[in-house]
Length: 216
Image (cartoon, rainbow, N blue to C red; front, top):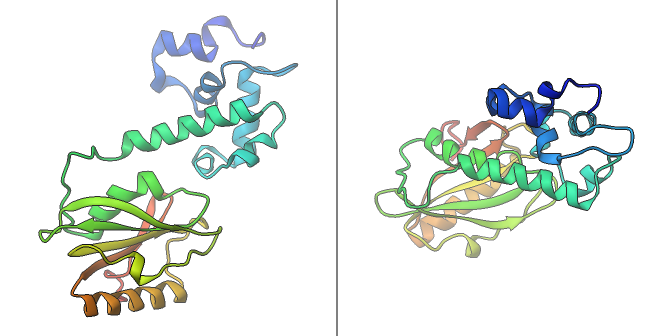
């Protein structure tokens, strides 16, 4: 960090003008703490962001991806992943709040911070009471990069529910398999007297509601 004026080094700058004034690379440099031989923490942060494809793609990074970058070992990869996960958690609602599902947007606001940028597809359910207030959110299956297997017997345990899963591709549009799976689960719900309120697909900061699209 010798090429950067002392008062402009990330940690000193944070103390001087506040965290909001730091760029993405400077924030990451603070998380990393220090650099490596012939590279400052800021240089290393720039390399990580370049390797990930930007700060928005960093949320999809896995430990193996990060450790492929020179200067990032298991410890530093863990620091980065922990910082990303902490950021996710600060955006999720407190468990004590009983959110009422009145629209797909409410579901998306609840789920996107936690699940929208996952690198592996996850299929889950938001379990609701009879007034469509959230009881809890549960991941049912974790699949590969583009698929997860879901069985009705793992889904139907409450009065009503919202299905959800993420698309690691970044495109929330439903595939034909998504539509067929949804119809299968809706039919199973009808037989069991359980209302499938919606199936919401998450991708980064976007979502797609199968109910809004008329596919439920």
